[in-house]
Each structure stands twice: as structure tokens, then as C-alpha cells.
Amino acid sequence: MIGDDRILPRLYKQMAQAEKRFGEISAGAQDAEDSEERAMLFQQMIEIKSSLVSDMALSSSYQTYLQETMKFAITNSA
Image (tube, rainbow, N blue to C red; front, side):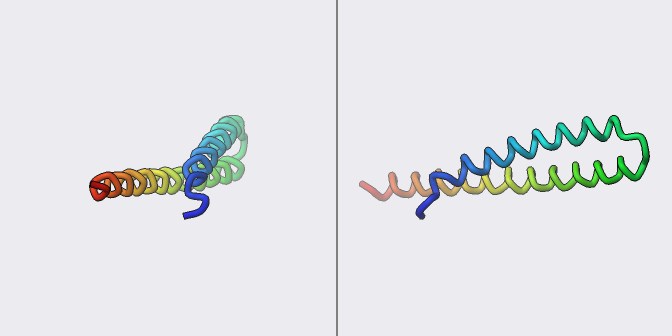
């Protein structure tokens, strides 16, 4: 499990960057004048939100995995 200690920080960094991009795009969507541009920006927002949901689910699953692994190690060490 080489590199496992970097998984969560990397996921958190990706989520922070995605949230920042989402904010920038939503500000642009409010300023957009034509419907095609708004549709494109809303599509980008949907893609970013989907990515965020995926990263959140992955980080949650990984945290659960780490907790269960620690719990198993503690329980079976005696």
C-alpha cells in the first residue's frame, strides 16, 4: 500500500480545486448573456459537481477502509 498516505490529501486538494472552479464558472454563468454560453457553463458546472460527488464518495470510502483496518488491527493484536 505504497502511497496510501497521500490518497486523502490528494482527494481533498482535488475537491478544493473543483469547488474553486465551480465558483468561477457559476459567476461566469450569471454574467453570460446568450443562452448557448449559459448552457455550456451549466454543463461545465454539472460535470464539476459530478466530479465532486465522486471524489467525496471515494474519500468517504477510503476513510471507512482506514478506520476498519485500524479497528481490525487493534482487535486482533491482543
